[in-house]
Length: 467
Image 1: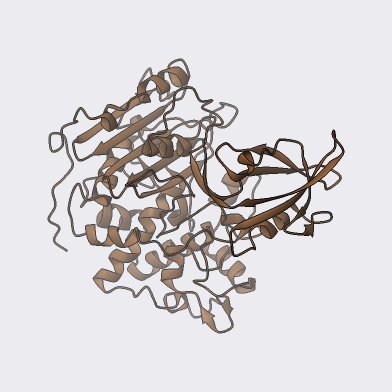
Image 2: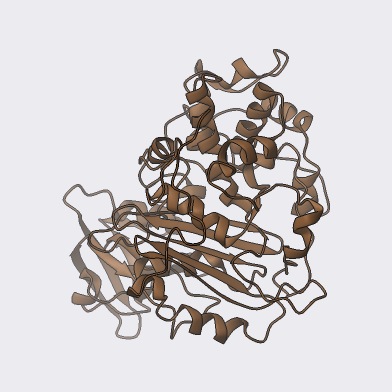
């Protein structure tokens, strides 16, 4: 397949002096948190004016090497964005059809779950709406690393044969390592080659991503950072087998900036129209417990219900392994993107990346607990439930119906929309508050200190939760 493209190499884009690629407080944030540690973080920014890479910290590989744009990190589930794109590339070649049942591409002896005759398709796997769970049950190993590394195709076949779908494939988004692993496995079976070769030859080489691999060759090992767990100790590395499509890739900030640049049209190739297809929103606000914070979901890009400033459309994907965290994201309207890679897990890459895209700032925040700014629809109340099952107001957000009604922390929520909260879970109570079609919610509140009971009616509307 001939590929014509404008490559993002040194000199093809010169870093501009606009506020985004200047990074505002990015380098100050990195220096403050990683200047004197044995790990660190690399942040890459890109837009129409150019790219810039910021970093602080070390590889901790027995040398005094500092992290930079060519340092290699495990990127975990960011791998899934490549697996879904590869599925579209294979369909373009005529090797597969995404609307085909997955079973068509597996050995005839393999039994896959169905829902009332509805089969799981390759598209369901790529878009993560197959109905398959986050992980298979019964993974063996002393920790999650061993369970993932030891998982084989035979293990996956055995689980699938005994699993029962609880909804029709395509109904809603449900994040699934298992589903993406199955997609990567199908890709290997269909082409007769391994996952890494497919990614390198079909995606990375056209985009000139020369340092992205699943297993490091000797000539790249000196650039590989040592990962550190939550306690700051050196961590073990992934050696995934059938789960490669869910999280096997390693990459650099410079390579991933090339990937981001292609996704937002700063560079062009035969992959460009396929990348645009992966950005199409397929589901909104998944109802499933495990996916409720995913927000709008594409294939497999998500927005995690983060606030989109006016004139922006944000998509991203995070990743984590025992010793690394990663995030890549972009704004399809403003055509700007961010890559965040780190060889430690105490300060996560995902909230850092989202906040940069939101222009929310990094200074003045606790790096270990900060979150993206999120936009929700509601009355503006955070709840808590004590050991007796009593629902209380934990917090009231500013500029919301609840704050305007004068509600305060500690009030007991006795009824929601006329329904008693006693004996119900917090999620059931929240669900009751959303059931009125007129976007109103009424609450019967008890002030234990004043021994008063009042009923307040509020309007559910959009509000922001600052990270």
